[in-house]
Image 1 (spheres, helix red, strand yellow):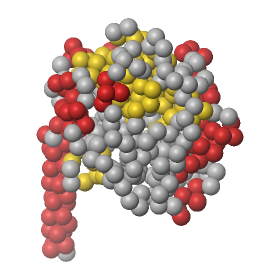
Image 2: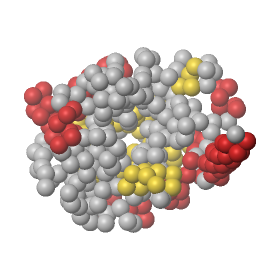
Image 3: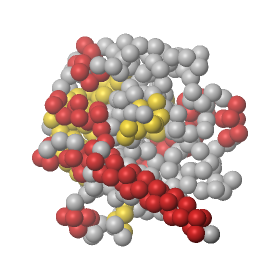
Length: 375
């Protein structure tokens, strides 16, 4: 009996040491980011979307559910028969830096939710997750798909100087430590939701080069109108800081281009509110991948993405949050196939450029999809 108790005690001590080691590692490794300061938390206390030390969405939002009928997908079971990962390298375009550096309004997609925008000749990055793995450590995490060309290898080095970086939230597939550190020396300013500055400051970004916004807050930057909008999602880089920072979508308004990027999030009434306040938009970047019946509130299925574009009054939409990582149990290219079918039925103009391809936004954007993902 005494021997059994000793064994249990030893196992408990080992487990306790393991937990302490994990906590110490998270505090030491900068990739996990920082935490909002006491002063920041005190400032948030009077906000309507901050309750008991956590940011909240207007309506109840479950991070996960076990309900078998929770999802609004049409035929989730069909996903199981499709390849969750590409069967070979994804065909991508050689990046045309001359086109990007021109004065034309444009967008270039790097897969998932990462975009390089040119609006009023300002070079802007949205969610520049440009590393090969979505994780705080290199030996564990979700790896980026293989591309037909190594466009990501020296991507940041080849970029022009960046006027501003926009972060939608602090999840690893959107806020990447290695990318931010590399961008520090060539980026003028960073725009983030409330609390996210704590990560950037820990990574060496000076506070004076960071602007934090709450939902519906608006500011001017080098002639552009910038606003953070609500999203039905959550935040956190470890189990101890869930929802201690805010998340959202970005509106960027230039002289000729009105752009909306949804960030991550489930479908909700905020889309119509955004459309009423800021629409119409020339181009919308709407998330519509990594959905699952287990988390119907925090990611949209493609049909909802098309509806979200209609709600915000988008003239042309582009589906994002796919094409780089497998984070859910559906075919890797299923999101775009479903979105195209729904967009056709709803008479929504949708563009699907290759990863690395630059699209000029001052054109009419009537670009027939080439089905480059079908291989």
